[in-house]
Length: 634
Image (cartoon, rainbow, N blue to C red; front, side, top):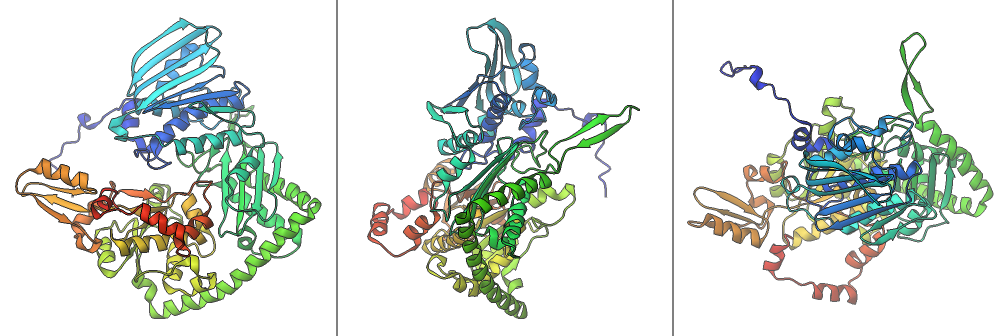
């Protein structure tokens, strides 16, 4: 029933300034905030938004270099394009829905088309300075949190182009820091996709001569079964090969933007490769066998791309181009180009088929890999089917999974899509810990999967042995990735174990399983480790939860009198009411990461293989006391 004591008047209606709205709803514009520990954190999105504008200048044929400088928290990006029109510098960075990219004649195939990018950078920066240089004239503007401080025009000897300097706001991003590995990875992708462009980062130059072929050759961590196939056409470039690892390792790009979560172009690529290979060999191979172990990349250029969010990590466009046109009678209609699906399929069907006919050795190596994958899949499929039937009869599946109401892959109305992106599954061990999380979770978006004891070390076992394992078979079913990773039911896979030796071991075993058989889950940023507090410090008036010894000592000092300190050894020791705050919006997660240069097989051999002298020496060098372990929150 409505509360009649609350008056709803004109005073309740608020109009936010453009910068206030961005700061209040930052997630709408840049996704997560974060402090720089995660490559998806907002500070990297801000950097990307500025670089994207410079990339678009190069794409249009202006400027062959971009200089990027990061000194502490301050970022400077200087390009040598046309420069922002001098009389529009303030508008371009401070008025929403203002920009040159609404004009197809100026920017035909750019990344940013909604006039938001630099405005978000401006609003979310404690200091923001932009200067445009055109034919001996310059126009500058300085802001703080989106508020204009100064602007003006001067003469200059600078070469044409634009310079942007900004410092992300500590009020929004906390005590953040740029991880230069993440920055360099981003810049490398730009270089691979824009042959002839030099990107200088703190004095180090990144440039590519062979495009996506360089990307694959530089990043593949195992010997490919055949030399990568490199095919280029107008508005499309692809590379593919096969290795002996499991899963698929395919990176995708649109107009130079790394679409980490894929989209219509990646789906078209996967479908077209499978269809073309089947038709070439005249064999009805299953798509999953054709794509098992595939390593590849696809890049397309389209007009006015539609992304599923401002962070542009998933393409939603259906057509290569689409625009509204005015008919002679004054009515409006939609003019469309070919679908992305047909465009990608036609290119791959023609060019990959031709390549395989010419390069018989590549075709033979590809077919050998497909046949091996098919044989293994059929053997494993029978085992999984028996395991699934047995589990259904014993109802063990329902005992291990406490599902959420929203699944990542369900067809949801637009109003619930945000919930789908927030879905998580906690993988924990034991009835006590899983019971605590189950009671504390948000049942709408958070599921819990309970392991019984330690899972097997997958690195040491055959795929057949893993398929026969009840725990891991049930986990695969819960995740929904039995046949295709695209069917993943949860956006976040969170390993939640105790902060002791057994918990660490279980964590390693789960991550090993995912790395070996589902590495794309790690590569695409779906796998996390839950941080839980090690200490509770409280007195009669206040309670604080601490994640390290330093935080504990600071809490004791702040609370002063009558302080009681509790050391949590296991998740089951934390009450469900307390635990709610640890898995809510402020949940602390460590992303499980894998750089392009790291070899999965070498990592697992070192950490999970035979107990070699090298590993023993590594352990001795890194031994820590219990207090030191508390400080790093292991």
